[in-house]
Length: 336
Ligand SMILES: Cc1cc2nc3c(=O)[nH]c(=O)nc-3n(C[C@H](O)[C@H](O)[C@H](O)COP(=O)(O)O)c2cc1C
Image (cartoon, rainbow, N blue to C red; front, top):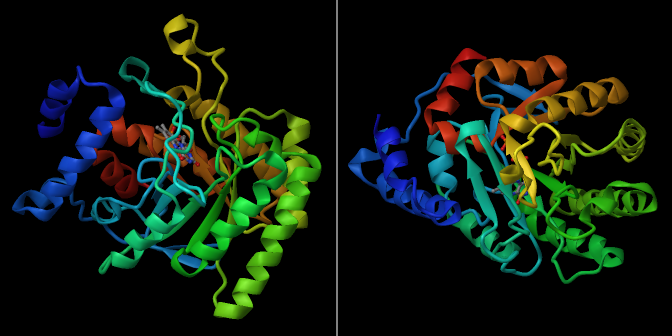
């Protein structure tokens, strides 16, 4: 009821301003006696994945809390894990505004944010400040816009080294459509070189800190069967700990109207089947050797179950939280 009213009031604002405003005011609510409005009391449904115990299967996708400014808020919503980022070694402003577009009539979002973030150090300071949370923290990392592709791995290695002690898992984002050529890192020599270095770094950090932090790769839905097979083989070869399938899509064939042809990555309901198909194929190729985290258009317990039946061990949401509010977390976790 309250959520519907706020939604009506905010209807005319630019989506990015609206999103920032909602997050800011939710932070005030979280510190006030009205905290109960965003707090979900949920049953614990433990699940072990990548050697970690998660209190439930549902996580927050990367991109909504890029800088770790709202960790306690998403924790009180009941998420089993929260993926922060994407962060890069240095802060950057991202792409020109407007760069975020909501389409409530199709429950879809198009974004071309371009990794706007305050840099990994800022995020880590926020994590250090957190006192009492009851969820797992993933840190999603990327490369700076100014770093050439041939040197991208240096950015990932800087971030892994810095994030290692503070993350329950680290995600290598090589699938955003909004950083030029980033998706090329998913293929061939570039992928091999990146994963080799990443695993080497993980091994060294593990013996230094006596702590094993799983490293995940987040992949794009815009890949053909051959590319998918090659990616899966490479992930198995380097013993990558998990794969997030999928990021947003640049495909628009399911949407005929030109208003949806805004440049950027499409998420939410129109992405649902595309990402489920990738998960099914990936599941066949990975043969249970690497867990899959399903992301893309999950907006109900049914669509969450569909991802699990297709092979996902854990699931994440972003767009449906924007369109349906906090109650979606409760619905999915209760009905799973
Ligand atoms: C506005 C926006 C920003 C996003 N930023 C990131 C990001 O920084 N890193 C990332 O890995 N994914 C990012 N994503 C993709 C989401 O994490 C998620 O994979 C995708 O939206 C599909 O899930 P959904 O359909 O539940 O939204 C972003 C998505 C949106 C809508």
